[in-house]
Every structure is written in structure tokens, then in C-alpha cells.
Image: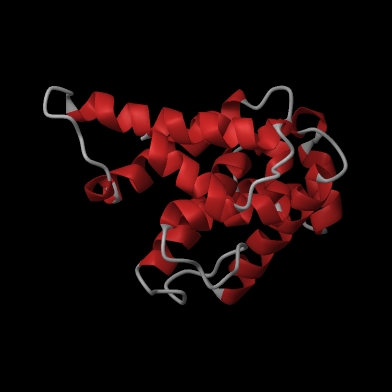
Length: 181
């Protein structure tokens, strides 16, 4: 992707996150996104087939950032998420959520968040697969079930944390997560 395309893509992401701070995902239109991003409709569609694909790319951007940071490759991909990372990829993810980077909490808290949660879970599965050695799987449990359990536990921990007002620090909620898994 050349510099111009990257800047356009970033403008679309920033417009999307700005609109997320003002309204629910389902209320945002492509027209509003292109107006705030100051790009043409054809330009938007050359980057994203639909608003749902923009949402999917947004979620992938978060996890790509975490993978690049974990692999000490902060320059391998230019991200809309930025930080120094942490020792644990799960702590890193909780930190981004606590900071509400790019209004990500608006997606998790929206009434119809199933689409985002599906994308989030798909990317979380890749993350869990890369971190499976951190979890001791009981010998009588199939690996696919174990991975699903870890992913579900993370998602439910995250939902509980948000519902309770995120009073715990990312470090504490990460400790809770590892304790129950």
C-alpha cells in the first residue's frame, strides 16, 4: 500500500472512530463516514466493500498491532493503534480496551455488537493459538474445546469488566483471566 492509500485508509478509520464516539455502529452510514473522512464514495469502496468490512478491518488492525508488538516488529505494519505493548498479549489487549483506543468500547457496548464480537473472537482465536503454551490443558480435554474455552473466558471476562465499570486495572483483570483459565 503506498503512502497516499495508507493516509486515505487512516482517514476512513479516524472518521469511523469519531462517529463511534457519537452514535451506535448501526446508526452510522457510509455517507457519514465519507463526509467526515473527506473522501469520495468510490474511494471508500476501493478500500472496504461495506461498512461491515470496515468494522472487520478495524478489529484486524487491533490484533495486527498486538502481534507486531509481540514480535518486536512495530514497523512491520502501520497501525491506528499505538503503544509500547506489554509482557502479556492479553494484558496488552486489556490496556487498549481500558484506554478506549479508537472508541473500541463503543463497539463492545453497542446493542447489536454481535458482528464485532464475531470478528473479535475470530482474531482472538489466532491470538490464543499463538499463546497456547501459557495454558495447561487437561489431558482429557480436546484442544479445540480448550481453545474455545479460553476464548469464551476472555470474552466473558471482558464483558464482565466493562459491565462493572472497569474498576479493576488491566493487570488485575488479566490476573483474574489467567486464574480462571
